[in-house]
Length: 492
Image (cartoon, rainbow, N blue to C red):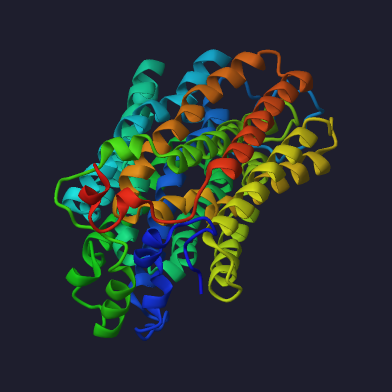
């Protein structure tokens, strides 16, 4: 039974925070066929779409460039190229472009210039108007611009960058809106389980999009990558519009037992204080800044792999376009699995082993940040040992999945009523690595030597280690005084 307080918390703070004691008075609603787990699964599908649309360009880019031979192997790579079946003739129908490495970096990073703009507004609007339509229309907008990607590429790199920025604007509301929705849907003792299932869609989208994009490029052409995933996104939007409600109270098909269980378990956490938002307390909260630093640091490594791993596989390890997607997806299979398993373990430790929330969040964050740092550096020293390189990169990304039950959902622990806004703030800073990381990495790897890529990996690892230490020192696991029932009583 998690007490949600540290040993140093005062008695004044303790009374409104002993939420699990309140949970004990209400019968827990079954998980099977429940509305809350239905929301989690449909959210998983939504994040699958969001990340598939985000990463498919990373693979398609390899095939969009005018630097491959007819067999699909990269013409110049550090390691010997791998044999690959000849490509079908009809695969040559799509256009190819003469973009240098710097232009490629700007194209790959441009998504995040739009993504950062709607983080904080997304959290605010989701809290004020509800998350359902904000999230749904945001992803739908990304779908529309994804379908326009081939036309934009033909018009020029500038047009493609503009379309990717617009995609980022649409997708920027997804995580803040989802956090805001979970503030009303996730009972405290099921928080890690529900959120990790939902957010694992991001890893699943990556796992499926990378190899499937490669297969589409191989058998069709790169334009179909954007058309096919766009259609998948439209199907999700229809389901989301028909099946999802903002809160348990407005859901037409939820059972009374489940509605009562969710609302009763959250009634001591949530504050509905109209438009009042304690901005001063939020922006000066050290536990929030601990999440900011951890999120920024982790995402530097995550986005380095997300956007540039296909390039590394092609330009350094010499894998063909068909092999590239499958091997680039391997790291995210483990990431998704460990995220879900970690969520189950985190809630078990809190509920059954009586570990304090702060201990669980920090332990999971340390493992999920230090582990990836060690193995991404090790990957740079494998040379042309393809098995070791892929293994170390896979382990690095897999261990990163542990943070899904660490700092990644800590916003809901410290301020559930403002979780969407907090996520918008932290994700704004965490988007910066996606904006500048690919540009810096491509600037440092103009010759695509192993030594240049070692530098990229060292930078990622160093930033990750700093974030892990900072979060361990300053992170907390309790609802903050300014975020409980009456924020006006705390002087803000």
